Length: 349
Image (cartoon, rainbow, N blue to C red; front, top):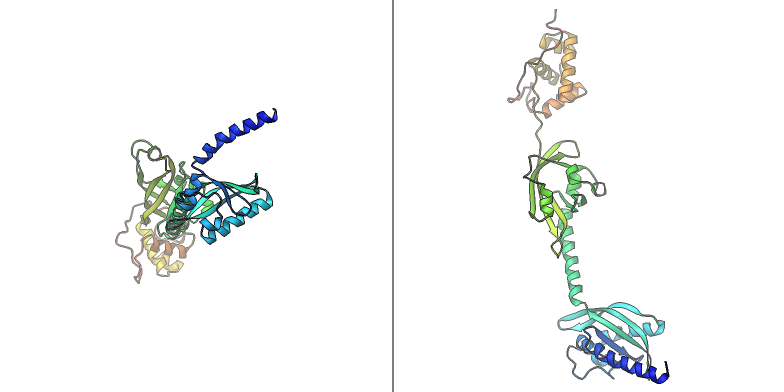
């Protein structure tokens, strides 16, 4: 392309770019190496000065900005000029009632008649930064409540898998948070009753309901069964799509073990054992032979889940067969006896 044609093309491009940059909503500027403005569009002037009618061309940074801002901008300009590479940064700028925040690029440029200078394109990100700050504060507050809540709480993904659990939830099941992650909540608890028609979890995810409340049961760390009221609330993104769910277990009650039914002979043996009876005294208390007494003791160990005589007495108190705080030992008022076959052998000869 001949020089004359090239110059004409550049003039055309320059003429087209000028109004484009001038009216661009992004803040655009050019400064020389001494900190003087060579050019700035209206958006940059409003960003930096609010409404400086005289424009910025030919003015120094410290003429239009408070000292701390001018010093910071000069340091960033000098770094770009010295290194010769662009810089992506977030810079504060003065605004009514405090400071705003701008995000963008500054880059080295060769300015005709001014040597190497700096160009920049920025957008006002004050609202974005404010939203991020508020989000961080809200997340910090939620984390404090989540971690210190006495009620077991867990966060679930939309598949119903655990993504986070608070200490109370971990303690209830005797598992660490890392061990709970990616486990299905339904692996830990059972629904106590039939759920309404249809899959309630899918109704929750699909927007059919915003909250799910059901009675559940599960096993604690020590193996004891508990019942609770589980409340699951759907958390949505800003566009309304499901993001995750928050689950809380309330009204936790340890299930009371069912008092086993014993024959009169088994109950008599338990009372004698609790009183510290010897083998001979056990035989006399029920008028049975040694082999028959051993048979009944073995049966009691199976019924009460105990592997020794001492454990038999402890389980008898724990399951409500024997009345606590009484001596000599007594059976609880609610104990029911049954007529199970007494087994082999009868009365002593």
